[in-house]
Image (cartoon, rainbow, N blue to C red; front, top):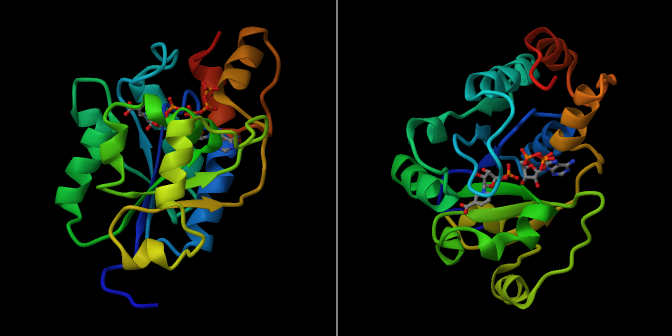
Length: 215
Ligand SMILES: Nc1ncnc2c1ncn2[C@@H]1O[C@H](COP(=O)(O)OP(=O)(O)OP(=O)(O)O)[C@@H](O)[C@H]1O
Ligand SMILES: O=C(O)c1ccc[n+]([C@@H]2O[C@H](COP(=O)([O-])O)[C@@H](O)[C@H]2O)c1
């Protein structure tokens, strides 16, 4: 590997309303497979494309903390909470690039996010700041519109080393354990008084119950 930079770091952005094993297991597998020096879970403040979260920002953060409390390789990043405006990823990445001028940045997302990527604010600029690492997600087959297909033609790599040797510009698919879990499923189960055990770590289940986050 022709390495010119520090090893890459990863950010998994999300609303995390609530965080669940479908976020955590792929994040950990990506961190290990790509040997990322750190992997940050980065809750957004105001989700650009979603209705207001049901849990408060404080509750979403607390649930991330509880989920990763015994997993030192996953960390919380609160960068997006400092801006009182929609958490546009391109703006966050510009700030992160200033903070990490010489470190490749991998922005991690599930397949559903990539499929809709051309609806993101200034999506054309995002690869100027980072690589995209995409994990498959059950129920989301990799079928892309013309814009996303063209982006893949121009930027996709199957060489993981490229994510460390360049600061930005590649799209890489990482296979991870497929977990058909979503935050909306958890919210629905809570709303109908059904259990959520084994969908998210036990301390998160307890917290949701204690705080009545979704009932
Ligand atoms: N089960 C999963 N497998 C792989 N990636 C996932 C999974 N769940 C979420 N992700 C990815 O994690 C990121 C954050 O997801 P988010 O916080 O919106 O959770 P969600 O489960 O998709 O929420 P909701 O059901 O409310 O839409 C997105 O890029 C999403 O694609
Ligand atoms: O920048 C955008 O326009 C944009 C649009 C949709 C989603 N995102 C980001 O993508 C991540 C996953 O989003 P979500 O809605 O699936 O939780 C999270 O960090 C969002 O802030 C960003």
